[in-house]
Amino acid sequence: MIRREDDGALTILTLDRPDKANSLTRAMMEQLIAALTDAGRTHAAVILTGAGKVFSAGADLDEARAGLATDSIWEELSGTMAALPCLTIAALNGTLAGGAFGMALACDIRLAVPTAKFFYPVMKLGFLPQPSDPARMAALIGPGRTRMILMGGARIEASEALQWGLVDRLVAPEALLSEAHALTTDACAAPERHAGRIKALIPRVWSH
Image (cartoon, rainbow, N blue to C red):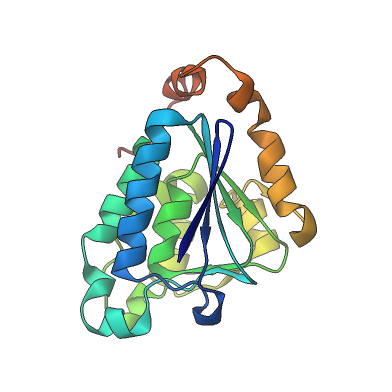
């Protein structure tokens, strides 16, 4: 349910479970962690996207009821993404919800389609967000807006997400992957590990 395509120095990982809004099972997350770890060793750029019209609805409902919603694998997944020594782009093909936020927040660049919505209903569900997510979110949009999402249950439209800095650019659905691909061109053509050396120079106000 994770589709991997390698194109030279670029790896594209697609959440491929559109009939379930790309909700994540533990097996899918394990597969993602393995693919990200491998790509980080050998590739200059990674694009993460989803099939269909939703990026990810978060945890698979059946597995969430069995404990996946609070499993430490979410933190392992976002931490793996954050630590990659290459350029990472989240190409958000639709709505982003719940624990899936962590993957996107840990990416270097976030592109989104104009119809995407963003919400993280941990207050409503009685869960805590994954430990690194609030800090990463606050680094992008500030503490007040982070509280609006995590504590106030706000559902953010794509245009507002762009205004806040939660995403970096809005792109028409038919151009999303080509735009993401274009942003990886220089990294993929650069000398080996050069993308990682530049990435290390850019300050981050959150830790892995």
